[in-house]
Image (cartoon, rainbow, N blue to C red; front, top):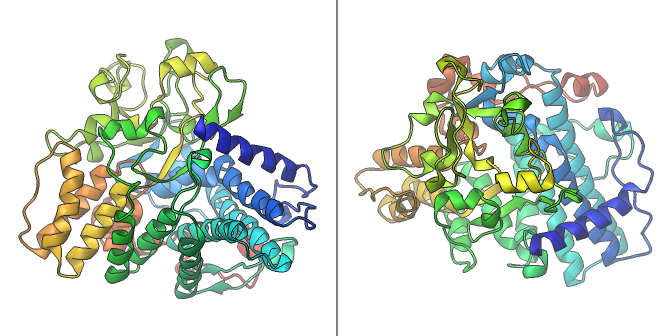
Length: 500
């Protein structure tokens, strides 16, 4: 009920914002942010804008749907487009095979959703500045907005490289046509926003606002942004600050992190909140789990979603013997869903290659929804109540271990990696060399975050993408996706990525 209360507050205020005319949202250049006529208010108006950011992430595919999956998962060696081979065939070449397309819908939406989140955050920031708000509550709201802006830019700078910096709400088409800034300048804005967020966000909002952004979330995201710049000292320092926070710890068993009861647990640093009432009458959910559920003909009783983002043989073979993360991450066609690791005592139909009916060998078990909830809500193939886990405490531990190793402190950092391994049922490693530990950390990150959207960007930042993904079609220029052609056409001063 705690999550319900917070998400109900978000939904209520967001509905008020939607009642204000904002123009068409169908085309990129027509989009405008919400213009709430509450400028005579102070704190309430800012909070309304901020809650609109939470809702925007929950409702848009660039953060929780197939567009996000394409950029963050399909491009790795851990998963592929999935579903029936004939379904969404146009997504295979641009993402599974690295034949990037400038004008594909997924690219348009990913860019558009991130720019709009930035604009919504800017609306709150600019409004607070115009009203001269400096109270503690208002500063916390501004900090939330700046976190969202930093979060959106971190995705964009990793995906596209140089991108425009917007510091004002997008009110007219011309507002979108801002020349690109360098990655260094984008990261500078991210640093400023996350420093502010860490300073003014509370460590906890209490049970009334479970799942709301905290200073720990700002510190963890900031650490990750430094990790991508190989600023090891900053990464380690920020991770260690998170590790001192008593509310964070590894949650056991591993599979429970991804169950309904594991939402906003001690391992959770940031999740996109979702809620559907037990009878299905109230739907404040996302399409995150729906996009990835097992796919089959409706009559089979195994049409649990759209079937996208299916694990590969490569990922299935990556786990050590005895690693509990394998049966907690993968559902196997033709086998039990394994109640020991989060299943419900059901046998999946077999894979078509073995004469069965399911189009893929494996499915993402981390979004495998409770059959009882499917029945009570009437959402058999649409489990919209599942939160999207964005930043977990294990990520902080593995970032700290990696940074410590790169700073020549591997003998210290290995304890954090070993904590993650021990939770997975594996033995501890002994520090030998920096090179060996670097290899071990890469392995741990892969199996710890299987089909959670980390792998592709990790491979790129490690400089391993050409070696690992080259056989799938990856070349170095694929580290950045081309900017959507519609943006280039509309804004001549936004130059396409030079390698595209």
